[in-house]
Length: 215
Figure 1 (cartoon, rainbow, N blue to C red):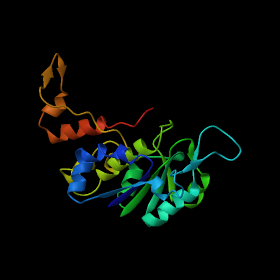
Figure 2: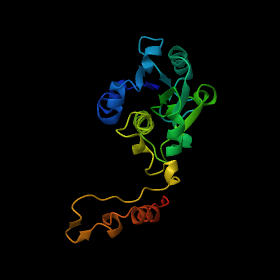
Figure 3: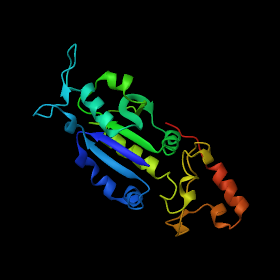
Figure 4: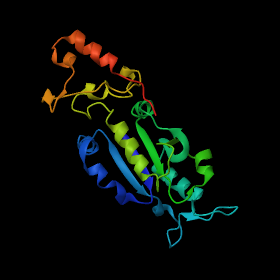
């Protein structure tokens, strides 16, 4: 899979992509991440990428022409704008994106992005929740991490990403609680079923304790 990031702050991605699962996936050549500085497509000496909104208002808006030039040079791919207007990101969406060969993530910033980007230049808008971040960089990191771990060969065992919270195998529910040694600690005991060695009792415990997500 190839992932392209369009951002005003490329250095924000240096540390997250140099650690853990994403870094291992890059080393295994299971993913190729390209980071594009939107200012590279500005046409003036000041590298201007934003302007005041028509009709007035606080803040600056990222310009449609700059983003359009950038996307044309990057080339085709499933293009996503990180936006509070977007549909909320879920594990099911992560599974859908993990099946694609290429995704492009546009990280909004400042007061927002010219609406014509959403209307004409992207395939969809995605939000990670009903709250506002400074820019789209952190949401993009979360989406990439969630998608990459679903790719075959990324995790240590293929089944690692199958039976977990919000997976289709658990009917989008929260995974059952898990325990490890010591079996007894400060009077806090591990459920008897998990210590029984009886596969039937263990499976019953898992089914009983797999729960719906509650807000």
